[in-house]
Image 1 (cartoon, rainbow, N blue to C red):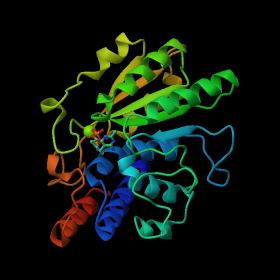
Image 2 (spheres, helix red, strand yellow):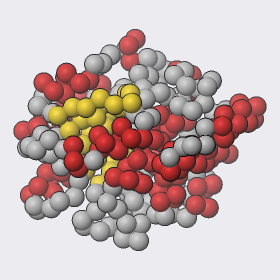
Image 3 (cartoon, helix red, strand yellow):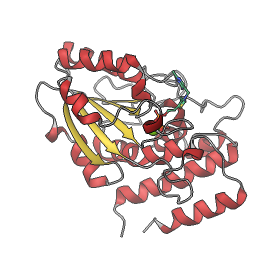
Image 4 (tube, rainbow, N blue to C red):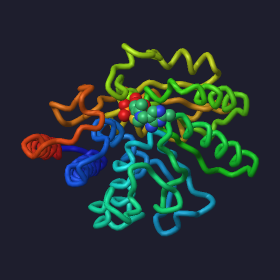
Length: 272
Ligand SMILES: Cc1ncc(C[n+]2csc(CCOP(=O)(O)OP(=O)(O)O)c2C)c(N)n1
Ligand SMILES: [Mg+2]
């Protein structure tokens, strides 16, 4: 029997896939890899209130890999920030659910992302602001592993350590694939852990599809005083769907009707 969080993640996977299929666009591979992490955050870890999305004391989540916006929209809808009916407007004219998240349009979105390499620097600013205010809220940021090739991230990593931002958690969605290629064949940054440790961060490596492991790594109890934390989440691009999983072709490919039916059938099978 799947846990409550796993059941929620399964619902989100199916709704995400349906939305991408109906819109005829999206980034389904990277969405499937990050959905377990987003589910654990919004349904267990983050102190947020859909009734008060601007509460100054809320925890902040920055989805730096903004191309997987649809996964965040589905999570925000399931959590009550936006109506669930609205998911079907994804990418439609006049919809606020654009291909990349926009903080001025969608409640619960903390910052605009899409150009890779910007979310972590912004999150460092947020965490520093909380420190200056002596506020207790935490900042979480999710980057892709390919995204970590952006040099701006490494400047932010240095600053976070210098500032002692133990209220900041970086989650690297380490699915080993970027757009159209494996990291291994482009600019392979793996292993991430020793690099982050060398920059003065506390690092934990987890299975990014194991809910218990995700929740433990993100819990405030595992924060290391005085150090920002990096969780290297080992994931699969296309997780849950056999023909997409770990397959470079499925960065932003859209399934045809036969593939869609098969994928839905496989996801139904993981629900319990
Ligand atoms: C600065 C910048 N360059 C290029 C792109 C186009 N782009 C979108 S997603 C992507 C690959 C990202 O790979 P990764 O960070 O590993 O994400 P994931 O595997 O989780 O989809 C690229 C190159 C972009 N959004 N921003
Ligand atoms: Mg990747």
